[in-house]
Length: 120
Image (cartoon, rainbow, N blue to C red; front, side, top):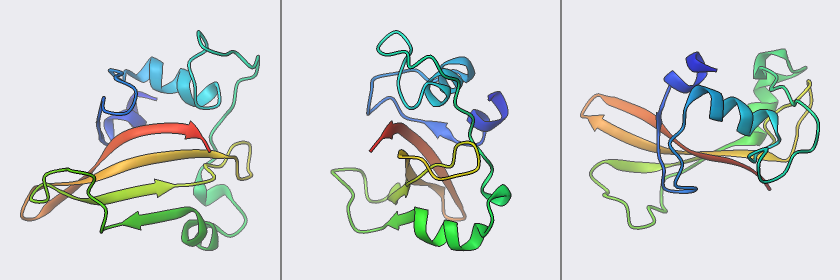
């Protein structure tokens, strides 16, 4: 999970959480919530998009980029959102959604800033 979390910046905006690799893993493995809040007794595992039968079709359906709604963010830095619906668990779509901001850090660099993952 440390490698996954290191791939993007994190935001505390949605849940006022400081994301650590352990917390990120717990949140995903407990189906989008803390075990202290609700423990479903299962350990959910994310599946790579590329392990799905038709990854390109899945990507086109599940990942949406919104470039018009900035929700009060600095338009010079934030250039949109990414909504990743149906995050795959155990090789099939689930009802987890991950959200990211698209942040431009300089004229040639764009990064994802993780906002949250939750059940839709």
